[in-house]
Image 1 (spheres, rainbow, N blue to C red):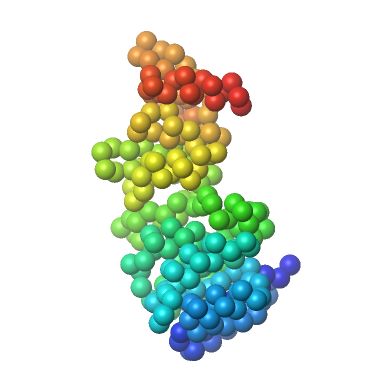
Image 2: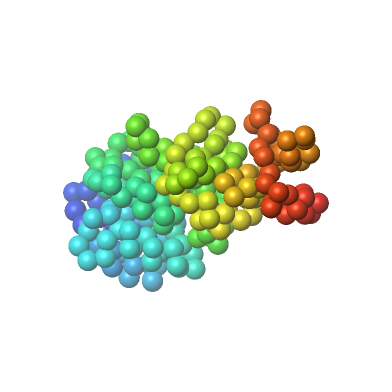
Length: 240
């Protein structure tokens, strides 16, 4: 299987280097190049691409605006950002980017990004790619960390902070529970005003002396279910 790839960058040398690195991955074929966002949009209006390797800071229509436009297409391509700046990472994942690479692009980083792009292309239907993300991003002292949604146990809110709890630990994220609930309404269930749990991880509902709690697979300690949400959780479980 070959994936049609469009490279978009206003610097010819950057496009040349990226194309040379891409040539080492025979399953990805560079079918065209564009020097700015509008040129990429115009090309995609006539031709198709599975993957777009996209710079952010370009004259005219920048990379973020281009990616947002691409997401509205009937068959939206997967986007991987390739940029010299790290201050747009969170905004990049708001437009459902598969990855965010910093220039100069390293072989290993590109290989990782292409693997993620391939997973989306092979397993995720186009309609799904335009809605819920497959990964959640978090800024840490080690840089940007991507957590697969399938690894997440639950989200919790504490005042203005929201935490992502996954199989390997906990991360602070720059998102609201409401946004997460709307985006992942089929994958996460609200059990408390400050808690969303992964539907796939629900193991059992239990009534204790301290109230109703929910047990999740992969989590030792049960989570409290608020009185307001008990009825909704029970209805959901009966429908599963």
